[in-house]
Image (cartoon, rainbow over all chains, first blue to last red; front, side, top):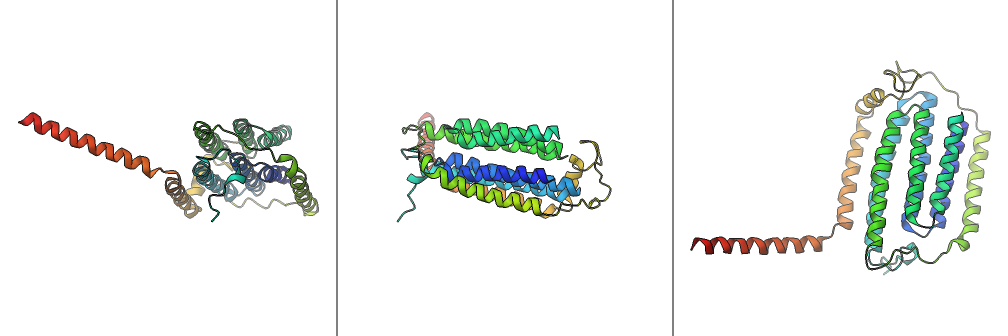
Length: 97
Length: 201
C-alpha cells in the first residue's frame, strides 16, 4: 500500500514541476493530466486495500472531470493562441485591460 | 511486486519524458506510454473496468484532442513555436519547491500508521482472480455500484459533460463562419427558387 502512495506522490510532483517549468500551454495541460492520474492511482489502490467499490467509482468520476477539463482547457488555448506568434503562456495578455 | 516495480519505472520515466520533451507531439507520445502503463497498474489492482476506460477515454479521446489542437495551432499562418526558452531561470526554484513538497509528503507517509484493511465493506464481494464474476472490481460489480449506490454522482457526470460541451462551443465555436455559411445557403435557396419560377413560365 505504502509504495502506491509513494508512486502517486512522485508522479504528482513530476506534474507540479511540469506546470511550473513549461511555458507551452499544451504541455502544462498534459502535466495537469499527470496530476489527475496520480490522484486516481490513490483512489484505485485504496479501493483495493479496503475492497470497497467507492474508490473505483470516484476514479471513474475523476476521469470524466479530467476529460471535461481537458476539452475546455484546449478550447481556451485555441481561442487565445489562434493568432499568436508563439504558443507561450507569458504572451497571453488579452485579458489585460 | 515485479509488475509494480516495472510499471512504476515506466510510469516515472514516461512522466519525466512528458514534461521534458521539446516538442509537444513527443509529450503526447510519452503521455500515451504513461496511460498504457497506468492501465496495466489498474489491472494489477483489480480495476479492469477502469483500465479499459483509461485506454478509451485518455488514450482514445483526450490525447487525440491534444493532437488535433497541436495540428490546428501549427497549421495557421504563424509557425508553431514554443517561444523563448525560460527553463534555466525557473528550473532551480521550481525543483526546490517540488523536492520540499515531495519530501514532506514522503516523510508524512513514513510516519503514518500502516493502513489496516478492514473486513470487505461490500457484502458478497471478495478478492479473487481479475475478471471472474462476483469478484471485487469486476465489470458487473462496478456497473451495479454505479447504477445503484452511486447513481447520483453518475448522473452528475452527465451534467458535467453537457457543461463541458456547451462551454467548448461557446468558447471556440466560430459564429462568424456559421453566419457566412447561412448567408451562402440563403443565396443558393433564392437562386433555386428563381430558377424554378423561370422554368414554370
